[in-house]
Image 1: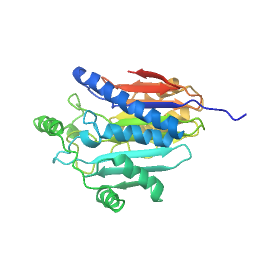
Image 2: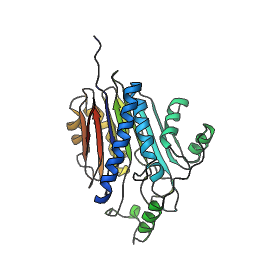
Image 3: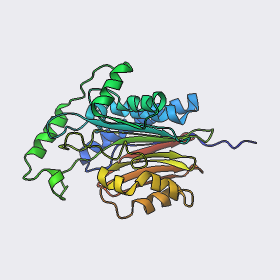
Image 4: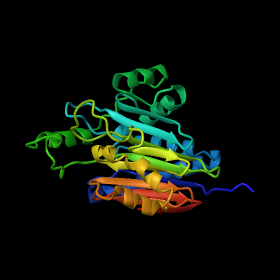
Amino acid sequence: MRKRFPFLLVVHGGAGRWLEKSLPKARLSLEFALEAGFKTLKEKNSALAAVLEAVRIMEDDPIFNCGKGSSLTIDGKIQMDAAIMTSDGRFGAVGAIESVRHPIDVAYKVMTETNHLLIVGEGAKRLARFWGFPPYNPFTKKAKEALLRIRKKPKLWYLTKIKNYLSLGTVGAIALDTSGRFAAANSTGGYTGKLPGRIGDTPIYGAGTWACPDGAAVSSGVGEEIIRSFLCKKVCELMKRYPAEKAVRKAIKGLRDCGVIAIDRRGNIGCHYTTRAFPWAYIKEGEKKIF
């Protein structure tokens, strides 16, 4: 008899310096995205459809640093990154894309409609228009206020190693369906005050997003740290030998200001982070937990 895998969906709301007063709202928003994604997972038995649904919902919630809640570059623009991957090796991503509501949807189209892995900047926006995604302005007052605070600093964050005032963040989802298929999706607005054109770990193949037959992982935090370590691919390589929790702890050891969630072939869940907070949640066969 063919093995039946558990329905499993894990989501995160971003590793960073969350204010305590913001965490309850973030967890409520995570729960909403989690439940919607899990409903899709059960109805369609598709890990891919589930992570798309969960991330799309978080992109519409300004509590998170993605989509509508995205941070501003130092010159006041919004440039977003997103990526999606399935365990059969398909991958699509966009970097520094502007003026779209759901970067994850454009990343999905890159995966399904092109033979490319990553499209960035103006090219990504032009493709979005070609595919029928209308112009959208995700600007928020909160993002503007955060940029004004950064501009008051004596040194901009990218010119110093002191990042105590940085607000990091990405949202992500990983899923396993009953057919044993994994999917991973990540979306982010990047750092407040980043240089225009900066690309983080989210859309980099193997760094911030990874899915393979052994599992799936997505990360959040200081993208440059995650890119150097190829964190999510490393987690999935380790899950060939270790359960998900042990794999994420081994992979993230020595990295600062990062967080990662993962699931392995046996349906184990792993999460570890080195930031002040990393709201995350999961549903496994109907059992729900929010952290």
